[in-house]
Amino acid sequence: EPEVTQTPSHQVTQMGQEVILRCVPISNHLYFYWYRQILGQKVEFLVSFYNNEISEKSEIFDDQFSVERPDGSNFTLKIRSTKLEDSAMYFCASSERTVSYEQYFGPGTRLTVT
Amino acid sequence: QKEVEQNSGPLSVPEGAIASLNCTYSDRGSQSFFWYRQYSGKSPELIMSIYSNGDKEDGRFTAQLNKASQYVSLLIRDSQPSDSATYLCAVLVLSNTGNQFYFGTGTSLTVIP
Image (cartoon, rainbow over all chains, first blue to last red):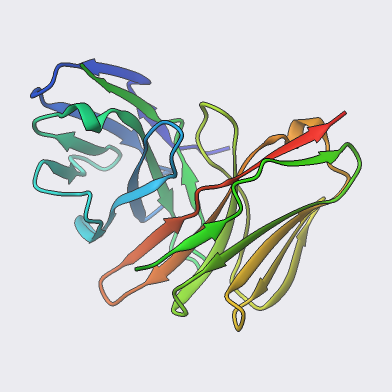
């Protein structure tokens, strides 16, 4: 069964460093998303991406964040200068263009900023 | 402000009972509604989606949607200990530029053997 994959599973970085989180969405899906979940809190939408551009982004997705689809399979989230409060689980998801836009999540990357 | 509200629980039910999970949302323009299950330390796993008023059944799960009341629920019949998890309600809002999903904080369910 097709699934969304994410690498790495755990990333530890120092404050101020840049990190890139990688995702491979399900191959026939057209919409891609990034979410974060701070420990014990709800899943928060960061950004949606369609047709090689950002279609929606939340207030959380400020100038330190960027997304890219560098090739036909990968979808990346870059955090330019990490802060302690960026420590969270980051989930990638993808969906087809159907009536309901059902999303499927990857296993997540746990980002720890020290 | 687009809100998705869930009772955080914990909700405890005995094995074999029906678990009832509820969710309300604020945006009348919401298009589709989803229930996800999330085990501790894992990613959300899609259980069901629903976008029309009424009931939708899939195995032991039934989703119910009432757009007039801005209410969506999930019933789990014959609850099993393996159903113990946090259940997330999510709402899709479509706009001219794209789509955005909003999640509730989740309801923690414990099924007691």
